[in-house]
Image (cartoon, rainbow, N blue to C red; front, top):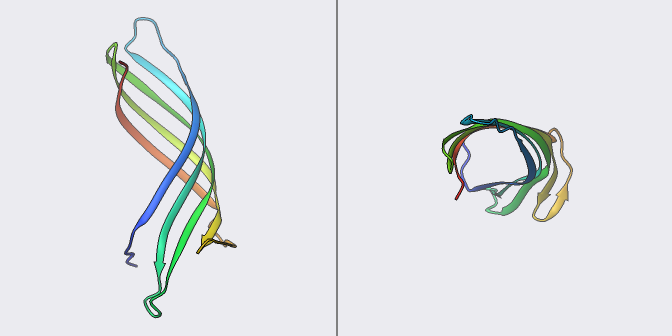
Length: 120
């Protein structure tokens, strides 16, 4: 199956993180929890009729995360972690009109993160 077109995927999330600093250590582990609203939008084209329709899926998700910061200096740390979430994508709209779903409700999200944090 080949899909063409533009897709928009967004996650609006809020959460909290609890860090566990250890005196004299350059390593700081942390855990967190979050809730959010994932959303997927696109335009569907019917090649037989030439009609286009706006399509979106959205819902609610919640998850947990954990990771470790490795401080290279007091102001710079490498950060690696994992986040896992579950939710439902039960809100379906086609051209602004709410539609019923069949089999699209359960979602899982897994993110493996690596980056750097700067503390000015």
